Image (cartoon, rainbow, N blue to C red; front, side, top):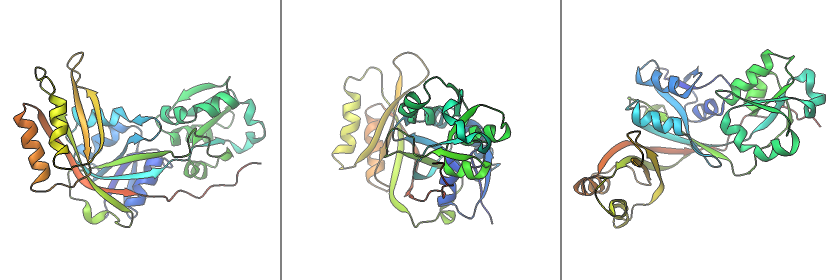
Length: 295
């Protein structure tokens, strides 16, 4: 049986590359937005949804977190981290005059990751945001008369026949993005294990409004059990100013003692606890082969 994987499209996105790295034999189906991709998994139109959740430079992808908490009760069944290389792409018919372009097209996070390059080399260009970096590349390929460039990856350049005129234009070299795999099904048998690096449990904690020092008590429940927290982040509950929940990543797979013990302790404090997933984590260094770069 071939597993169906929905990803943030169109073809050529980093999300597709992430999906391919851990699910190489899957049937991959692109969706135009993160909510559409997650809805497809929630409605079981696909077996797994792959969506970005955090970038090393720009931080969390809030739309993914908010839809996980407020819209869909989709378990996280896996995570894959991939290196991100942003390149400047142009239609081959216009490659000689790339410094004279008037427009830049890309996803908001990609634009933010390349802020210094844009300021230094294309300060007068207008920025147009797209649903994904690959969508920007496709837009440029479909409209060769546009006086613009796209910020996207090498896979998109190859897919849409564009020329890379500047490579690695992101501001920081250690640029990685975490993607989560969401599914109601047990998909363990479909995941390649060659790049598995760890196991993790993600939970959401809500604090009582009238309990002074509640967050300190919650963190103590992890600390005395010697559970390492790899991330803690607050997000608004959308019920009023000052109401927040916390997303906590624990470097520990689900067991019968430690994680249940944490949950029992924080619930005894009057806090709410919800497990978002306990899953394997993967790391990949594989990137698409670059096309020749214009000198």
